[in-house]
Image (cartoon, rainbow, N blue to C red; front, top):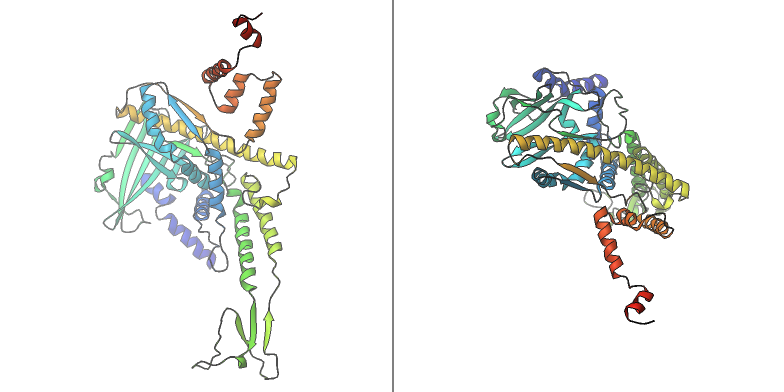
Length: 471
């Protein structure tokens, strides 16, 4: 019976603003399996600290999913920089791109948590605006041979005067360009798509066309930052998976172990069990306890029995914490982050081999994420450039984008500095290369700085004597 109820609930959900409803209304076949839909729902609940097993009574949450996504975003984007240059068009794109760059860590965190995120630009007066579409807010329909999304539907919902307006925006890359279709619906319920309505009923949609095509475009008008790693939920799908997808069961175990730890302290509070004869009675005939937290009544049925018994159990916090720490280490390993991020860093074996292995695993995860970010942002810049041309927001011109990510989190910069310094001393590395590598200077700047340093050095003693007329 329970299984039938769950099946009915799932069926009912898909009849709301979900896969089945969108397919029927837009006459398309959405390329996302039911397993991926369920996984997206699970990842969203975990990230929002709303897992089904957490009731805040017997099971409490450590909020590990958000912590993992946040850490991956932090070490991936720390001190990240981008330079867009080579024309006045590039200057305009760079100015607009700052809106994205200021929120990059937040964007990457959302993408890491749910397997990916779409950055969709649009024209807002004389500026470029951006929609950040989470993985559970769009429906992919078709992919190209490289796994790039070339057709999909975005869902946008607004509330106005107790009515819920939902817009389905269909993007389709064809031989002619990108075809964009818009369909609006109105409902009394935020979970129901409702009946078709005019786009003009929502001010923000009033100027949108129901059907338009952007010609001469060779790729989609959005960027998709895909969380790296193989999709073990649906191996046939090019979609990304959450950064903690391989640790969802372990996260549950960690929450349960943490709850056991809290219960150990709650249940082991010191108490005195005292014979009820030792207390006075209230108007209802119940024993009056001066401190309900400390005292408990004990019925001995005999005035000759013990008047009180002390309850001071031995805590097992060491064993419970050791078990929790072991689970946290498994989570760190499965999520590709270094030991000690979630687990107790004091318990980490710090042999040279183990440190190197942990750093390499983290380094690999960071590099993969940075590559995914660059690819998604390059696609976003392409879309921004197209909209800039269509709306004549800036003069035509080419642009180049150069990304730089700081690696100090995963590389011991002090150690590298000393090693490079020794290489310069043994003439294996040039001073210019040293400056470029350790100070982040380009070749021209490094040459200029070296010339300044040389100019400040005192002249050779022999040359000083000759210049002064000395023999």
